Length: 283
Image (cartoon, rainbow, N blue to C red; front, side, top):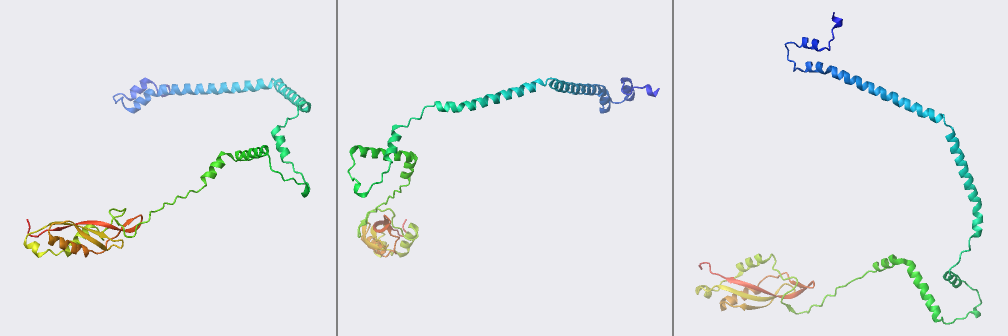
């Protein structure tokens, strides 16, 4: 009895999974096993059929080719006919060459050949004559042809290789001239901040001005010479005679500046400096 049981049948599957969860994976696999087996068998049958068909087609083509050897013979005959025709054409070519017209040499080439002929004569037979205008024109044409042979690129390259040197001529600077402004202004060593720190340490407030409570700004104009030293100095804007006198005194004691420059040369330059006088107890 056990041999007659179909383990893949629906009855046997329901019997095994009776009272169990049929959503379980094993039940679903058994349920779909029949369709999988059928698809597998169909695929195998189709593949075998394709293989048999290919084998049949290959055998048929080979046999049909072997049964028609006349194709090969016809191809060989065609090649022999082609070679025969080519040999006949080669034999006929010398006759065609004989019938060709001789090449006509251009008159310009003939003239050139004539011009390049060299005659060897004795010294006493040499006739040194001036060239005519026609001969000079011919020479010019020959020279022009040589230039044309050089090509445009060669002429451009020759022009590009010409070095053009441009020298800037600097105007001479007068020896004692004092400039109002220059390319590089004079500078105090350390800058403006260092300049006012030096003034603060070296200015002596005039006692009379301090007693009278006089204070304010005095503008001094002086020359920074080409060696950096201080030259002529004068009051540009006055505040009080005592303050003016002290401002001039302290300016003339200034250390050397970095001189101003014009066209790269050290020159004399006017420099304007405001000097501020201010009392410490002033409000």
